[in-house]
Image 1: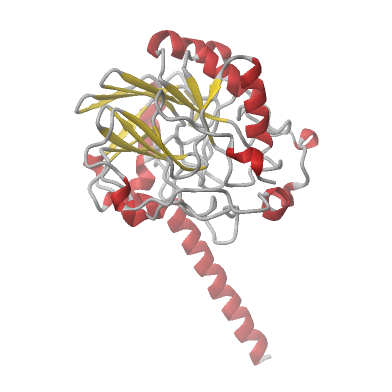
Image 2: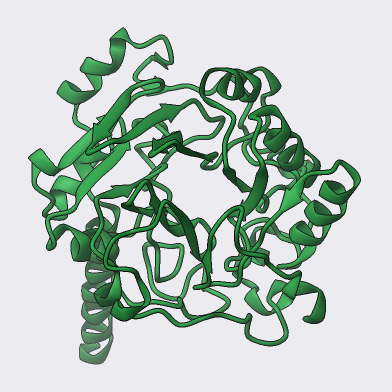
Amino acid sequence: MKMILISLLLLALAAAGAAGYFLCQAGAAPDAEQLKQFERLAYFKNGRFTAENDVSVHPEKMTGGSTFSFFSVKKYAPDTPLPQKKLDKNSFPQTPGELAVYWLGHSSFILEIGARCIILDPVLGNAAPLPGLFKRYGQAPITREDFPPADIVLITHNHYDHLERASVRALAKRGAAFVVPLGVGAALKSWGVKAQHIHELGWNDTFTHNGLTITAQRAEHYSSRRGTDKNKTLWNGYTLEAGGRKIYVSGDTGYNERLFKEIGRWHGPFDAALVEIDAWNPGWPGMHLFPAQAVRAVQDVNAKQLIPAHWGLFNLGLHRWDESIRAVQRLADENNVRVSAPVMGERFEPGKTLTRRWWENLN
């Protein structure tokens, strides 16, 4: 009996520890007073932000396996490690370039534009609040200690594959400014980011910094970090402009022709568009871009080239890691859309650097 009680106590302590760790990783959510401030917005209804698309999940239409297939990394992962160029503190110019992109895997990027440095959705660990869930296919090409000095840390939304506590805390210690969707500041503050370093944007809001202009754009998605906070924070795409150069960042989004064409009309043309290409599935048709939609989105926003994002690192769509990039490349070739997909860690300068189709030689 004594051993049973001890075992139950240990289980209870382990459960409490896991719960505490989860809440720490989740961060704080906006409180009632903060949510009340959003009621003036047309896209905030009944206490939650809303998407124009139907972003609901339809389990009966899901392909690729059961819900448990999300944790079957080997089934969808590459057979060999993906190529990458390791980055350290000496990999970056002392003054950021006029336009350069470093893909760190999935949706994490380091961007140089108009001699400014932006770190986008930095996630160097797994895409989950607890260890062992939603594992990476491989290690990141950089460590948090080796991040270059950033003018801005830019966050698209609060899902775990885009917002990571450890990276936020590392960058906050350097005094970085954070540009985030409405409501996301609550989590950042709970992780130690100073309020004066947080700038929350709603759709069409603009933030300017030393010649850099960032405008939040509408996206078709949702937000959540715990079971009770769905859509209590916003999700953004972004347009970035500095020194006469322009980049479009789609963030996670479903397809909306009217929306993309409006972005192109009011903010384009763009030197490059960082557009998500993966995690699509018939079971959730409105919240991510299918390959043909990703190509159309680049045309709609009037971008010179597509730099694929949201791929190559996590099993989030229940399909092979390279299925999306192969489909996107084929469709882009058919529609005269240029695709530039650098390997992880490679410095890519749109209009100057040539990329190769490195995935075609991997199994």
